[in-house]
Image (tube, rainbow, N blue to C red):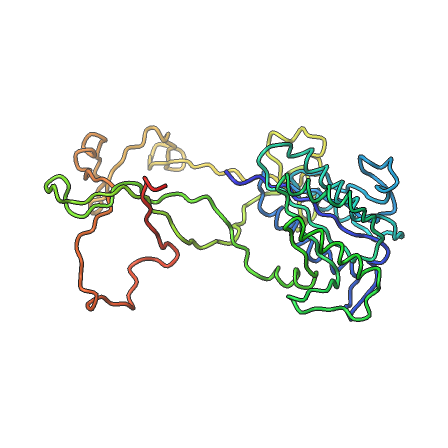
Length: 386
């Protein structure tokens, strides 16, 4: 079973994010959303019920969170509760993330809201928890040392991963430094960096994060053994000197295939809708749901029929049930029937084994020849190893 994940994105939509800086032809918010949309749509494409995410808007015009009664939590809005995100949710989210007209809103308080959301959703269960903050660092921070230490303690205690990505943040390892930086932004960057390092998290500049999106994503999978059994040298049934070791064999690497497309058909009651539009596919049993009217597509169901030649049947062919079929083999132009009893007699009895049949001198080995697929290199491990 895939690991359960809960990720909360905190997106700074303050008025300062509308500026075009450092020669870019897009605003800081648009620049930041390049990274955010790539990460969110990748999660949606996984189509995993265990991959959930939430979104918090920082420095929004309004306030919408469970702690909105307190002043320090104003201008922070929960745009998406932690849940599985489908295409309709993605469209609604795009409409909600808009540049605001205010500069008020505390990023540290937004972290508290994110921690509360994850704690409420994941409880004490085994989840992979992650908070990603994207900001330009130009807002005011309520950097109270006591509250910051409590945040660090909670993140560490619950094994959360904190990622802070800043627009034009200085990063010596990446080799970027913003010239003529605003003093308040410089102070905020240092606070964010200290906070991330205290949690063993990640602190970096947005430019590097966007560049790394072009790197192939590796998919970690649960190893499934391709063989479990003895590794033998010699025939243990005939020789007492034979060596037999219990081992397991696992694929070391495998090719990751691109996502495959599925076939869908437009619903008959949606015939007037543009066939090139994007629709949401719901199972047949969800047609009574309130939003089923917006479901423009439906799954294509396949069926198979079996026919035999019959001159007396209409069309010269007659349908037969699959239960009436029998197994046979072609011999020239004749079909030879074989029943299950006869087939069991001809079946070769074998058992899985991994045997060393001999050795060759090292000098005679061809080092340029590979006798196994590179994508399925395997290794051996003792079943009794600790």
